[in-house]
Length: 633
Image (cartoon, rainbow, N blue to C red; front, side, top):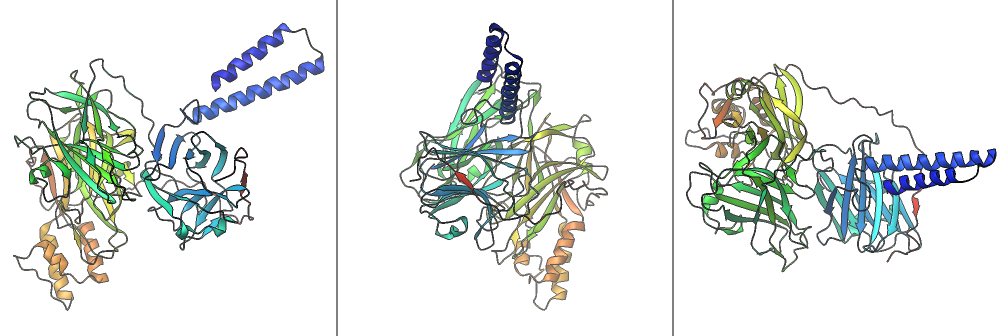
């Protein structure tokens, strides 16, 4: 597009030079026309740069994902950080009478921020809208979804529109780092107005989770001896149920020497792009010589127990993610002495329509090299120890638990020049709703390592950080998770089971150190004091017998407001038990029990808002959409 415009301008200039000298008036008109075309060209160049491509339909959109399981709605998007805007393109392959597209906190249609295209049977309209608690739609007086174009293509209807990250509109979703829950719906009948749309009557609707605000990553040069290896499931017949986790064991070649993984990317079976939700590759524990070659559901009773020892993450991908690149100076080591040759691929199939007969051989392609880079990359676990002493009462909407990597541990285990975190994978089980890790130095919060305010346990990927975070000896890394247990009647304790909970941040960093696990939990003795206190202040007995497990004691607690508040305070202030572990699971030398909670004397300031006071705005009308005179089906 840009080259064509510049060529046109050069040709115009050449022609002007070849012609006889025009009159003064003609010259001024031509100067004005030339300035006009130059301005248009400059504007388009700026737009192209903002869209990070040359053709917004084909090459201008870096990210793409199917919104619905059948692939009828395809979303492409791009980001302009200078303009603080997201450009959306939706390809509707079989349009009927309109679509709804938008964002909400957890993926529901209540209190959602929506862009809506609809037809009354004669004309089509586009508008920015919002939904209330009862899923009723309302026209937004502040139209922040801006339609750029709408036209029919050979593939279907293409809608191109944009929206600012922050609009200062209380009815709009704030687009920020982390997971975004996208929602969609297809209108199958004409409607007289926006307000007449009934969300509950939509036959085709759903949600898709993506990371909208991708970091802009410079792709490092790749070596000439680059090799690839595909870790792929073998002809899986996808079960006709909404959620399936599939496990597959693959083995490295015999005597496979040490290599560095320097990038990886997904390999998705054609036609299953909307069903393969996310995938992970784990390396198995090196202390086992063999692992069964299993290919089946991860929750099957037939799954060998030894597969539970394949937990060292090598790669992770989720819908919307692109290829993952390691920094130029580092690679993830695999193969060679002391490294297991067995790997476990785990695929999450999301099949809400319960489609039958779909076969899949998806997986992840590793790119590796024998030309080792200067540094081995490492993976370190931050957060909470997997223990039932950290628990969430039932019926909670926002319950926080925090795990620490203390200054004492980092002082002992990190090199003087520090480590450099370049990626992060946040992890909880089913009740997790937000996760964040904050770096503190000498009691002052310095920066956020990674944060996801809309975290979903159903969407986990290794995410590149927007900037590398350096951690020095003596720094503190605090990881906090927020949970929702409204639908549970018993306390949710920490542990490995899916109905138990975790709070973990797997940070990817270099250079690799001996420190592999830096986590904490409340001191067990103080928890016993809590149970004794609860027993004294409640009529119902809470068994604090030595033979009774912590899980059983939590199950017997009557969860009134007093018991909840005391537990919250206990987790905030009681001494902690630190796990400052080497990769051999051996603690670094030192005293790690009953350690004080690191003190934070200065927190990071909240981002300043540039929003003006909300003014009452007059009603607005929707945008009339002309679809190349092609009527909606």
